[in-house]
Image (cartoon, rainbow, N blue to C red; front, side, top):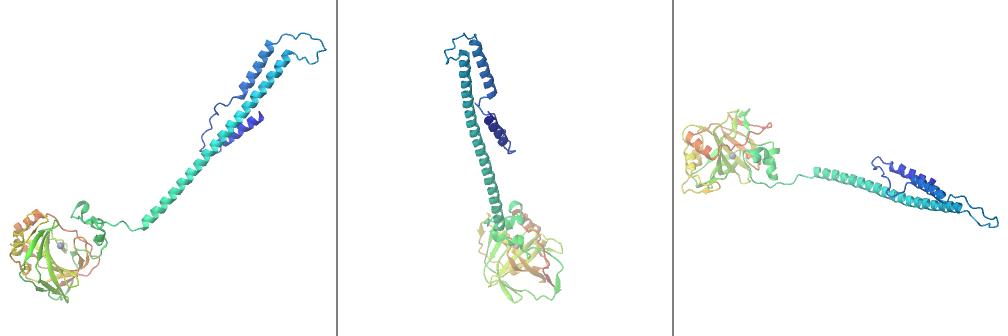
Length: 363
Ligand SMILES: [Zn+2]
């Protein structure tokens, strides 16, 4: 019995070792020793009562005689010891089994905790690696002037359009604080040319035949195309304009120069009317008229201008573009302005930071 009590105590101690350990339930099927003892005592008493008659006197020459009641008592005690020994053995087995189970559970819990710790560590490492790695490349091509695909998100739509967000020489700008100097005149060498008109989904664009040049600051650029924005993207000392025409030129090295003609409400503009007369019926379509168009007819009388470095005002927002903004606005009739607004009520990029760039203007 002392062994049993010691084992039970041991079991209780182990069972309360870890705070996370569940309370050890009573071991099923383990006999309670105290009732067994009581039962054994009761059985012995019953035996005594059953066989309790006074023993008959026997002759003394029968030395091996054992009184029946004492014989029964001895047998009962032996049986009790046997029961106790069996119970003790069974209990020992069950306690050992329970201990093994508890150790296995504890080992499993420790293993799970270690696995969890390793997984967390691996996750942290993966996150650190991801933070150092460049963001995944984007290949979108759809952009617009508002909403999800609007100017604030252009740089995220396509990785090649990063300059739209990161550039420091972006266009358009509010033209102010120009340095008044004797700017050389822009030399225009324009001529009547074949053209076609495309509604490209962002604006109306006019491709012009070859042989139209503009020279400034020692470089000669050839006119590629012109297109329209409503309202004008540029501002001058905070003042906005109804529309603007951008004439895009390129030199043999691929450098760009954009001439901007600000449009204000006034008399009809014949070249703009020629373009409107030849608009394609569907977006994405191109109309190819058989007449010619002279870009000279778009220019204002006075040739004073502002000049500064900037960018394309549409994705990919490429920088290194020479901007030439004519000071004198060009007039267009209310009907001509209204016609464009039916196609493109708003297709202007917001004003960009000047970031201290130099602006020169004609005296
Ligand atoms: Zn433009």
